[in-house]
Amino acid sequence: MTGVLSGKDLAAAIRAEAKRACEGALVTPRLAVVVATDDESSAWYVRSIAAAAARTGLDCQVVDLGAGASPEEVEATLAGLSAEESVHGLMLQTPLPKGARLEELARAIDPVKDVDGANPLSLGLLAAGLPAFAPATAEAVMALLDHHGVELPGKTVTVVGRSNVVGKPLAHLLLARDATVTVAHSRTADLAAVTRTADVVVAAAGRPGLITAAHLRPGAVVIDVGTNATEDGGLVGDVADVSGVAGAVTPVPGGVGPVTTALLLAHTVEASRA
Ligand SMILES: Nc1nc(=O)c2c([nH]1)NC[C@@H]1CN(c3ccc(C(=O)N[C@@H](CCC(=O)O)C(=O)O)cc3)C=[N+]21
Image 1 (cartoon, rainbow, N blue to C red):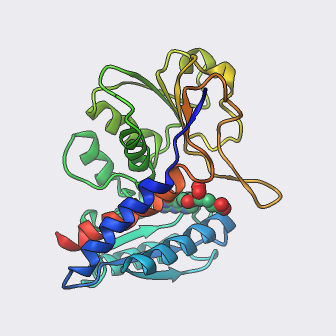
Image 2 (cartoon, protein in one colour):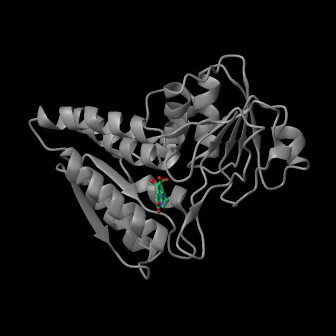
């Protein structure tokens, strides 16, 4: 029997707590989202952040520079918003214009406002076990594991994917919780051999159907971070059908995604109180 690790109730609980905090706040928390792409899934995410912010009681300011924006323009916009007293949280959407790198541009995000953990300083602080915002997606994985009672100390966890926004920060968060962590990636020689040793597999490679039943030890917990758009406008994860072999798996949609959005708001509330 393979269980389903839904993120919906958890996301609702996180938003409810953020809402209570907003109601008691002297200043309304404000999140600024900078967009420099015409990517459809990014646009969907921005709309869903704005809608969730409105329902929760935060201000959301979307600054759309268009897909043609230069890296210099994006950087100057981030620097300006970082200096803006009314802005508590600041994130830069990906994908970015050609030639631009998130880790480079996000250096212009003040670390105290870096609610999606994109500034490399935030990643360094996180790695050192010092207070910093983790990328909302990486933290959503931890929150889902905790919410569903998955034990981590001494467990083997394989993270598939080594991005600066998911794989790397997540490896540090898991290490801080005493898991034994392996990070696999596109150049890993025998992926199935590495994932089969794991009690928990986190799929964060951005490749639909990459993880199959053959990649899993029976009973393994599987967290699917993939949000891959299909041609017919649907959404699929990085995990194929693993029912019958996995102990439990997060659904897509309805798993990591809604928790990610909720945590971004929670981080902004936290930043507004600092
Ligand atoms: N700097 C940055 N950080 C990000 O975290 C980031 C980004 N840029 N650019 C775009 C992608 C995309 N992304 C999603 C988040 C939630 C859902 C989500 O909640 N999806 C719903 C369903 C959506 C549907 O049904 O179409 C779900 O999984 O239940 C999807 C996609 C974050 N991203």
